[in-house]
Length: 145
Image (tube, rainbow, N blue to C red; front, side):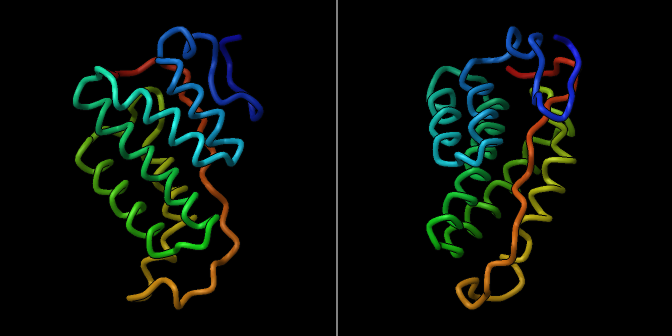
């Protein structure tokens, strides 16, 4: 299988090219298992990885944790994780990393979470219906270190 459709977030080529924790985290994230996705990515992040991959994984972890915090009713903590993830994606400076289109992912992230930034205290807000991003990798295998 080397093509993507709506049901597949990645191909066999991605499975061969990228760490198992990254792929597992994608599956968990897309299933709405944000804390478990965090755990999978953190396992890789804590290991011997290059600085760019470490920064990327930390941003992904923080974006997953933002959704977990919303699930447990902590919008202030969700906002903190969302803003930290955005900062790390900006520091990373790639449009695509590990075959993830970061421009698209961040647009989906902003669509889901930017409401957290609309007031000084996000606890004052009623959480709208949100649609977390769906991670789907680009077909081309891309950089990671």
